[in-house]
Length: 258
Ligand SMILES: Nc1ncnc2c1ncn2[C@@H]1O[C@H](COP(=O)(O)OP(=O)(O)OP(=O)(O)O)[C@@H](O)[C@H]1O
Ligand SMILES: [Mg+2]
Image 1: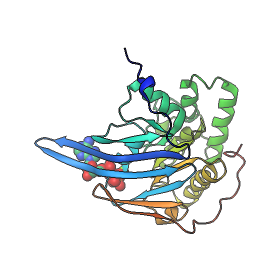
Image 2: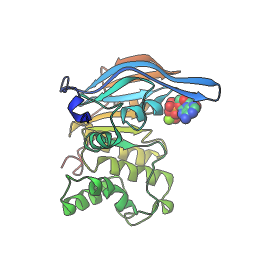
Image 3: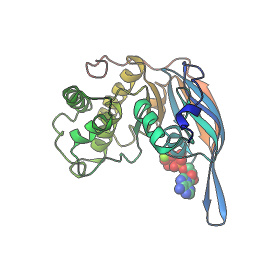
Image 4: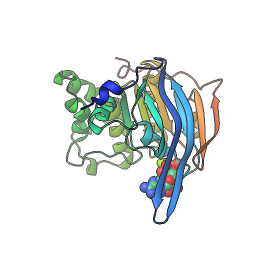
């Protein structure tokens, strides 16, 4: 049997963290085929902060799901840090995903039977390489405190508001210090204070730790902090521009940069 890992291409260019080539997604809806993404091409260098924008239904969440390998394209390819992921078998894909990506869903996707702390710790527990239980617990607690949930760690998702669940989902995405964080509307349900908290956390992650960050957002203020803005309309990129003057540096926090 051919080992799929042996057929993986060698990393192309270590400075490109995400590469998207001819990416298409179509879905059959009864007799109709809906073309959700119609052939996207772009690459994201290491450490870049990209805001994906566009009106509702333009394909942003679909794109993010494909970048994360949570969905399979109809055509084209996604490479993460040089590894082509789109057609990998699930076990290989899970390995690459676990090592490379922190994902924040638009709908949070917390496990209802686990507390906030347990939800944040879960990727750590599932990661065979992350053996240090105590360090994981410490980081999970610090992350929850840094998103303003220090006093909610033992609460279950049903006991938390939408915005609180969103912050738990963010903390969970950061626990393994992934080189790429993908987040779908991470400040969408937050008031301005908590939105600022989350923004600060994301910016620290990007600018202090060098995490490559791809955020879907409707918020032009949040996009002002991004290095680059990609705008989708009806499944195509209608603009892809570098931001010559990203908004100010975040304050230093003690948590993410540790
Ligand atoms: N499973 C599906 N079956 C049929 N159509 C789908 C499916 N998933 C997404 N779509 C359609 O694809 C388009 C893009 O959806 P997507 O969720 O990517 O949009 P979005 O840009 O994230 O929107 P929003 O800003 O509202 O979150 C929409 O028109 C949506 O209805
Ligand atoms: Mg969406």
